[in-house]
Amino acid sequence: MATSVVEFHDAFQAFMKLHVFNDSIARGVAPAVFPRDDAGADEIAGATAAVDQAAGRAAAAPGLTGVRFNVQGAGVVDPIAAWHTVTKPKPVLEPDDIVPACHQMTGRLDELIHKAAAEAPPQVGAEAMHPLIWGAASRLWQDSYFRHAVAAAAESLITHVKNRTQRNDVAETPLWQETFSDKAPEPGKPRLRWRGVSTNRDVKSMNDGLRQTQHRYRRRPCGTAAPVPLGARPRS
Image 1 (tube, one colour):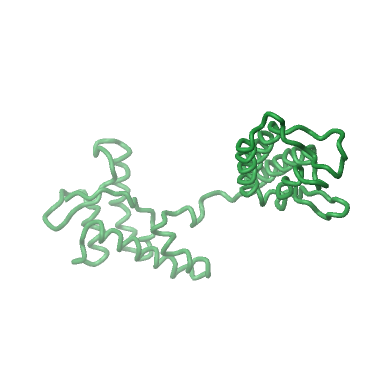
Image 2 (cartoon, rainbow, N blue to C red):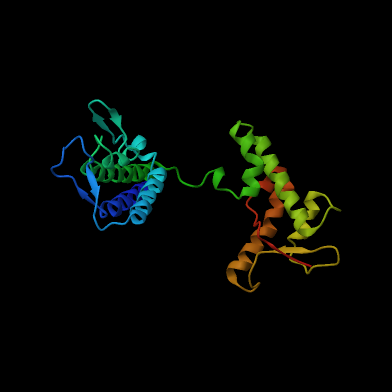
């Protein structure tokens, strides 16, 4: 939103370069600005459209920041929505109102950004999990059915492993043991390995960790929700 306000400000300033201020003619009755004599109609139309588009993108900024004007006879005026009035008779706002309002909005939005960043919770919760896991568990978890959520995530993970290996001929425990075994693949028994060169230290550590995960799975069915690489590469 802060970026949108800056874009509106820049588009408005570009529009104003095609106009001159009304410094003396029927101030408050005549428009606040007039087109420059050397500005073409098409050029002005293009600049007007650019400001309108930018105003649409920044439309929520006055509400978020509280930057509005109390104008006698007009009430509370949104400086972005009412920018057009600078070109109309009896203008509600002047260019010198709109530009400072943009500066105030960007300043307040920057402050909101800093505040939100400071108050944001660390990204270590369930929402940070892989979509395969959180997608299966989210609705149950949010309704406080925690054990059911873990079970749903486990089922989703097991189904994923079965799909990756095309193994529907064994139960979950032997599937896990055979899939992540360090033995060479056999006909009808593909293996899953962490991506990368097998001699790489990090790759070797990940594969060793996967093989150790099977022991937790055997002891505790819900343990299938332990983090397992969803990008593991099948070897046939």
